[in-house]
Length: 420
Image (cartoon, rainbow, N blue to C red; front, side, top):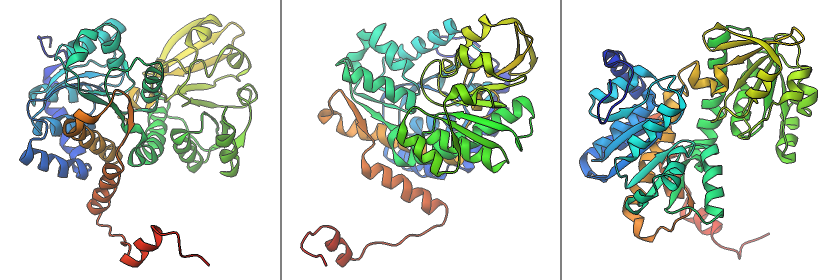
């Protein structure tokens, strides 16, 4: 389907997408509460939003929430392989302009970003900063309309902080990734579970007994290592940050340089947020049959051109599994074309954890609209009151109560006179 505002694979998938969106909504109880309030208050009435996100059932529920709040939203994909085509078709039926096709080439990917920007956004929602980068470089004439934006993921926040530091950021952006209710849960539990799920679906491997090398021990690396260990794998961590490496040691994992781990690993998972994490020297010493997967946002963490330069043959042996036959006869297996495996070969994070991430998105967009006059062009953290509100709502949705401080305890925490 290709009209002025929509470019999707197959409109006939809409009913299947609608059912899966409804299923995800069952687990998104915080977003449900926000949607109900947005429906009453319309805090985003007539606000134009351009959003570059993974087009999944969970994202669909965020988009429907923003629409309920009065927004005029246009969606595009933030990764060529992450789109769920049935969810995209359902979004069009829901009346939300959507431009996303699973497997789209780079030309189509950026055409879709530009279509979203044709909405002349007042707010941007990004996951990886491709939309914001395009806006700042090729569509800068539109920046005068923008009052603010949000960024979902670690990679995007790194890019935006670099842009901010260079003095090039032209409007305020809230780093949703930095909310505790995002990175402590989405990154750790969401990425951990969905990465293992994606690799399992692509390969049908048995994890027990495998040597799994996790490249990067941020919160996403924490989650992947924890899940692999729970399935019986022997986990090796590689890191460049000494504090994270020390933490991995204390968490009972082996820690070593990647060039050493490359000789041992059965499965390699990159989650470092940098380029060429696994490079030609590592490919040269890997053992027969090693599996390579990436769960970082961009497909640069595994140096695919270097891998291809060492290969005399390549074939697609299973969906999302490319077998590279190296010149010395060894076989290495690259999953999902090096793109984030949890969305390329599976369904991404469970809805329950995306509930908190997208609650932060919705509330931060509302915050920007209400406070735009006092926000400067820089990267902001999520306001503490929003972070705590999301946590309280999540606990309430789970039927869990917690204690409150007494007046005496509050006074003690804010005074300095009382000691031993």
